[in-house]
Length: 194
Ligand SMILES: O=C(O)CCC(=O)C(=O)O
Ligand SMILES: [Fe+2]
Image (cartoon, rainbow, N blue to C red; front, side, top):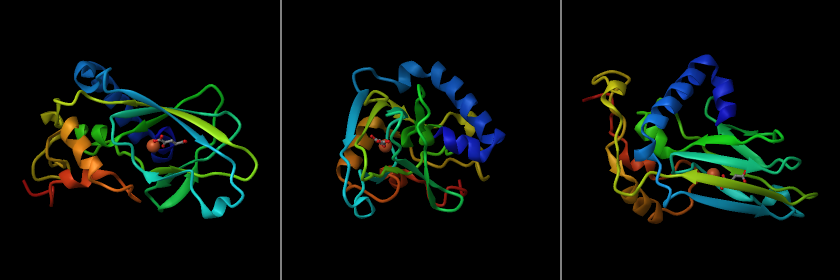
């Protein structure tokens, strides 16, 4: 997410810009209009917000999510990896939150990370958000380009190649989780030995 690029500083920001350029070049492969979808989330106000969640913690499995949240009511939180704390993403009027999905993480060989996030509710106001999920076509193989892989180093190949179609089936076999989606099932372990 954009917030995380700020927290991680220039290095991560650079990775993000570079990946976005590469993404544009591969758009035919990485974005399939038929598979792309929009989800609108409505979170009613809740008398006991500390006892419920609007949307449980998850990572988005797709490539990218473009999220619009209502201007006045916050509720989106990300799990900050450095200290495992939930951090609120304050809505910025007329802006989108860009969320990196698991498929993009796998394609960039872990140089960009999908982020675990959730939505909380509050007592005073209901909230709306709309998420636009970009997906590759179901037959496309998600595999990191060779220039991102250096065998026997910390940049060794992290994930076994998979198709979005296959990944979708893995997701269906998984209950809502408290961490990342099925991506870990493709992790090459230990990925430094290749
Ligand atoms: O409502 C939000 O801010 C988060 C929505 C979300 O994470 C999702 O739809 O996947
Ligand atoms: Fe999400």
